[in-house]
Image (cartoon, rainbow, N blue to C red; front, side, top):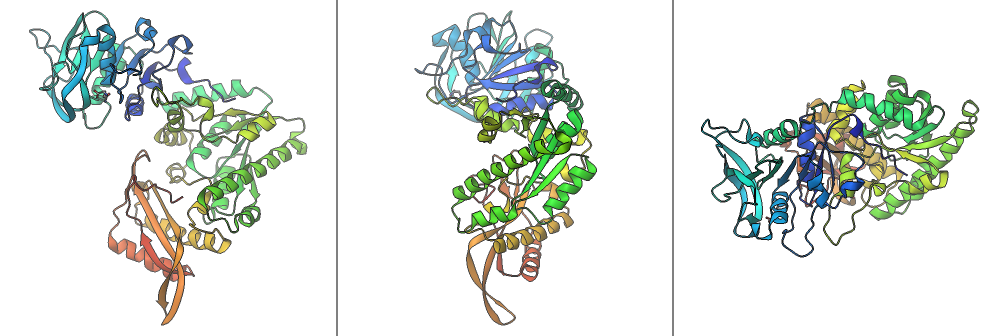
Length: 539
Ligand code: GLN
């Protein structure tokens, strides 16, 4: 069972109901950026089942047409809750359609891209509606719709127009009910954040109190209450920012009743185990056990070159090692009688969003429990419960939390590293020799990126090994050796990414150093593909 308590007790919440737009999660982000706590749920959410009362509700955009059979509609109770509502694009059409089926029609001209919006002057003094306060005059907005409001719903008035959309913004005359045809959440609507702030803060009255220091206090109190006075918590750490921040938070909350375990799977980066031990144990004072299972992993990976098989083997072996470790800790003399009842997992909000976002009338919506590939066998088998203190946070919020907890800048800003490690960057067969080549090349590449002062501009960088070999000539001798592929990407959300534009001279220096210093490499390539269509990792 996952730990489901959420921060609504401390923070006013703006609820986003997701109708399947690709931008829905941006609404959550934009609100949190102005320190208003926000959460997203599928549009099918029953209001009676909500465990909290939101300060306001936003109905998102979506790919459907409100008048189509099977199009998703919000629980009617949404409109009886008595809190302000803002509909965006599909959300606006949903509000209008429920009030009169002939209010919405398939547009003859679709409208995609920029439009100039005029907030309407509502009186002689030139006042505009609260939703557009501070945005008098013309602003640029971004549109993406094919359907259109053709009539004003009864008791509504127009608060903004564009040349194409006479009802680009509407409001109820007496109730706090609003709709906009454009998307304020995307960066192409440069002043969209002001509109969202006007809604959340001025119209809904939500407090702007979502700060990391408040989050730390409430989260530590919550963990203490949840875990109780005697139980112990186990958590895997990898040296990555998520597991380090989660571990530090547990340490602050329950001290030595938290046990961190680092499993060396033989596919870690150069000196990684020592670095993790140094930071977690010495600097952060966390109770850490390092298990060297490298031989077990590398032996099992012999002859395996299919990516999914690699991931499966590594995942299963990891759980085996971890289970053995949990039993050992419970058996240790100093922990006699202690029960490890909780398992810490560094699930982030994007994983949660992925599992709850609305996929359409026919698709099953996954529930919270399926998040993030849980080691389910462990949880079931040992009767442990999951504790997921980062499940409401985006990656940059995890970094802010890390800073708040006093974790060093280099660690907080570290690039993500995949769970299976270098194994999925060694394409083809994973042998100890090939892992070593990838590891050494990676170390040179990352060090050179650091020396050039580029590390923080790059979201993720690494060296991989191509499955084929290539011919080269070294010291007048023919060689037939490995090919290194360097990859470095720029991205903020890891959903889309582009190759980092290094200058050629830098790449040539990387190539020279790698070929000179790593025995068994005959050439170096740079991967220039973006995501999509390529992914950030290779397998
Ligand atoms: N599908 C609806 C339309 O085309 C809503 C689009 C949206 O919400 N972006 O008008």
